[in-house]
Length: 162
Length: 289
Image 1 (tube, rainbow over the protein chains, first blue to last red):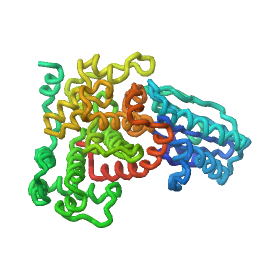
Image 2 (image 1 turned 180 degrees about the horizontal axis):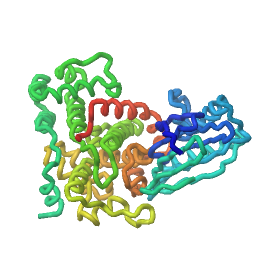
Image 3 (image 1 turned 45 degrees about the vertical axis):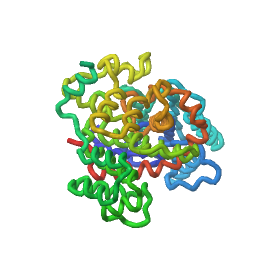
Image 4 (image 1 turned 30 degrees about the horizontal axis):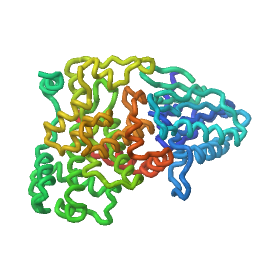
């Protein structure tokens, strides 16, 4: 109490990893993309990635934004967390996003495909998902308090914890 | 008097596009023009000239050398492209700081508008179809009716009642319940009032309902913006209160032959363009206070 929080905005396709206990990581409008949150309470260190798409097309140029694709986002986020002392054994992993339009049509499966790749990459890294709120016709904004690891979702004018 | 006219007439502070844009529009439609004509129309409006040159020199339009005059812009980019840039420069200056009823700031509205313009144009390349004329402008102005509704709601202190995911209606339907019209109908009226090209009016009117477009001349443009709009919302470019509570017309996807891989490729290839274009535009100070 009494401490002023320092907001750090994570842009689409971006990721941030912080140990500053006064910091709050935020990202806005996660539609069919995915907000991946990893938290090690011992350090403490929190990471947030705003993933946009599942994986690059063959021969696609490398993007200067590490979290545009789920594949590279998971790898980069874990590397940076471990660089700040996080241990995979202690990591709490939370996911939200992967929304879809209210009346989906065939080609609009970006959300499902992002979720698939994120889960696959986490599984390959030996991590399990502790909490998730995925799907639905929602565009979620996400807040992560570094001091506690608490994740808050805002969507459709309501706020609730994950 | 219809409710559409009543709303349009009751809004005193409705932003107006500079008359220069309408004059440029008739110039573009006439097919008899020169770079000098264009410069003559734009020249007396220094703010528009400055904005036009600023946008023309942005990375999106990809020119190798810096443009310093309107005439140069027309010579290098063609009159239609320069009209699109001029319309963009003018539009960026009239967006209200806050869109009442949508919980949307000018920056988010602009971000969404730019995203739909860029995505619609990129879909053309991805699909290998013939570029519909002024598709960028049609995509950019597709939601212009929301400005009318935003100004109207702010002036009357009313709101659009929508109960979120549990509500059987989409946000568009909620607009109809409250206002007996929607932003698509109002947007078309506004485009007409501003003397914008027909394709802009038709896309604004039918971008949520491409299946019911009465005649097919602009079907491709409407379908492209419909898909571009759905993709922009899906990727979270400038979400409003409706979030992803949107209906999508499968017919538009079938007519265009859109596949998942195409949407993902278009999303990836436009990511930096949308980002830089939105940032670039906002540096110029979009949004009226």
